[in-house]
Amino acid sequence: MIENVCVNFKTIVLMSSLGMLLHGCATVGKLGSESWGSYDSAQELIDKKNLNEANGRGKDYVYAWGRKQGNAEPQSLYPRKYLSNYCSDQKGNFSLLFKSNFSLVKDARDRSTLASKANVKQGIGAYQCVQKDGKRWIVSIEPVSESASAQYAGAREVTLKTDLMGAEEARKFYRNNSNTAANNSSKKSAPVPAKSAASAKAAVKEVEEKKEAPAAEPARAATVSLTPQQQQMKFYVDARRDINSGRNLNNACNNAQRAYNYGKLQGTEGTRVYTESGMLVARCLTSISTYSTRFPNAKGQAQRVLQNLSKNYNHAGAKRMLSQMK
Image (cartoon, rainbow, N blue to C red; front, side, top):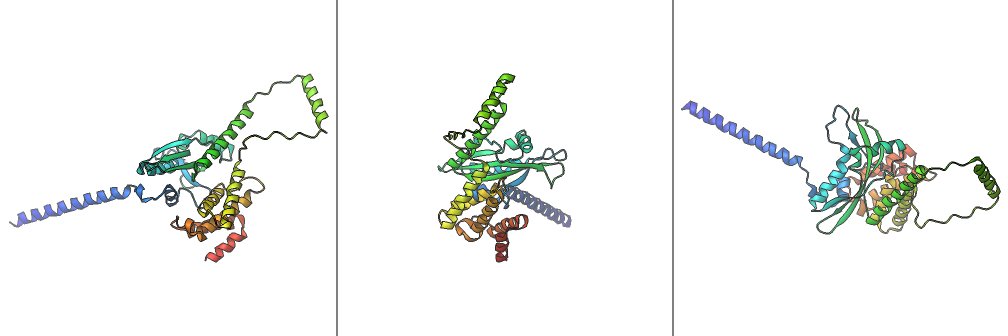
């Protein structure tokens, strides 16, 4: 009798333990799944997933793990993967709209390296989502630079910038850069015919004769391709104008962020435009509620931007604003 009771008790304990184990497995599986419907917009997903760092220079993603972790999933596909999943959750169709021309990659060697890597090319460019409810949005995922990983030994990283764009903005950005790349390519590949000694001498003489003549103003092209410096300046000027006038504040703050995301570009105005764009971003995150409420830790992000400007550029305004926030 006692033995039967003991056996039954052991059976009950065993079944209870098994039930708890199965429940635990189900719970872990549920926690591991992503709830894409919890994001109200693609921008909120970008912000809360921290697809860009607060310093405005994009975020580093591993595209090649090296020998030790060769089979691991490349991080460089995460931005595209997350936004594609969000689009699918909204019953939308996610597709490539424009291919990347690596226009934000300043270093020629980095550009050549990244252009040859499938784990980079498959996750960059401009993508369009057309949702079932008719809403349409475009996201630009662009490489900025390539480097060895400081966190993972033997791994290589690409810095990616992820930004939402309007249809016209995306069209201008990618078509202008495409035309620029095509023009540069044609200039490099165009063969230069060999000149005879006589024709070369005649050409030199002709040039000397024309030196004193005033140069005629070249005909202006119907459309002018903007350089990254010009695009950054345009975003900055538009943002400053609208913020100072108190109109179109959300769009103005987005323009400020876009200008800041370009980083410090080469040129006489490069540092000023970058740092002042950062100051506008900090203002948006701290004093423009319609913009700052989109971020879970707007004040912390503003402080990181200001610390970058204060530490790396000795920006007096950033130092003053930081002291006021303490």
